[in-house]
Image (cartoon, rainbow over all chains, first blue to last red; front, side, top):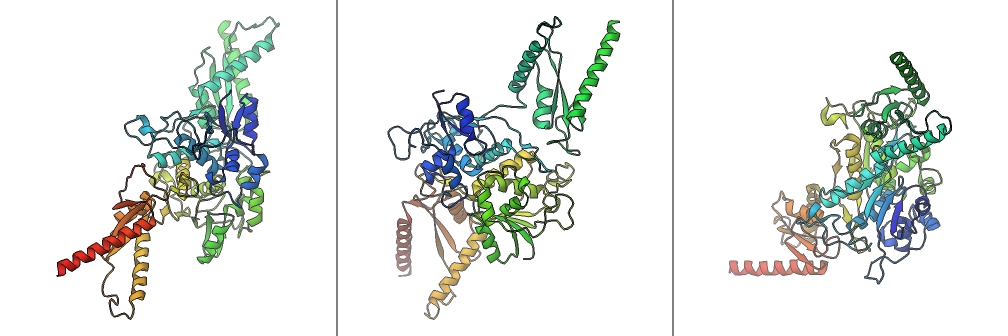
Length: 288
Length: 288
């Protein structure tokens, strides 16, 4: 937690406060960098962003290494917590760091493009690791067509990286659905909640395992895909239910097929309860 | 010129005025759309852009087709004149139009993703054509490392398009270097200027052709590549000279090799003049 991290995402410097709540002490935003070194993004004058950044930026913990300064700013990791507001600046700053020598902003690694190194030398010089909190391409809002989400920014950065490097891999870590870690965490939380619910009731006391989880989601690429692909270490079965009130809309193709498609969350819950009731009756019959 | 076009690029609505100077009568910016329909980009409240857009936006010529309105807004072409300031909004609006039915903003083409159609149905439903004024990925500014230019936005849009369509072609037209049209135009302009210079001098009067053009540029991908690849219909020879005062910096690899690399424009001019002097002497000797 003594590392210096760059964070972006959400309105103003909301991401800074999230990172500090997580325990990071030295948190820098692209806005902090722009205010300290306006020339890093040449559209800073009389433009759309200046007032915005000046109202929330904080002083950089160290200067940027523009002129071999003594103690330059070194970024150890980059976190994208949410859809950034200023994709252009954020893309430039992240690209700069991914091309830097050891995360020293203002430097350029001599390994970049060296065909004798892995990945043609890109991201081979201790550049900061890049993290995204999720990768949903779109999300449902009040607009009737889903809007680009954080995954849109990620795809945009991928496009710039492709053009800049001639198709090198963009090494990054993505959290969130459909990745298993998210489902593992959810299952742990559900088990903990379940144990608390039944504590002292004499019925369960943690000896029975959680048999089934109904995953209700609106996004086939993350919710449904994740539930379908997840293999619980406790043998818990995950059943995916797709609702039509969000990202997914009738008529769209389905690369990841849910167990069932229903109109909304209420119908999803009814479907699951009904299915459990039938299953219980089945069990009664089987037992009987 | 009676078409309705979407334009973006540059500060505020500069692109609108450029388009109107070109003779377009109905010019819409992404900001106009955002102010009329804030929900199209869900980060409009209390955010970085609202004041900016409200100060320069104009009323839309027609409403957007959100609810089968009678005379919906139809966009006939999209022009990116310069590096947009708000990549996120512009990406969303351009993506919406490229996915629409016949350029009607707010609609979604049923042909999208149809594997039985060319390009899997993408851009097969009379969507507006997409034009970029150039494709330089980076440009030289006061910052010591070149900054993302309009080509950066184009690469970003390509990345989103790849993610959205699963790798369909993004059909677009790009003007500017290294494309031949730019060099043809430059050659015509040089010939016209040359004819005017020598008019009445009795020496040339347009009967001699322009033998050589020295193309001095700082960008290997556009300036040098373009000059090297251009074949003049008049047989004029184009000679590329790369200077180190801009995008190109010592040590960077050169995918497109210039005839010579010099430090700056002054040296380039001296090199060219010297070369012409030597050539003239050669000719004298040959003639003599």
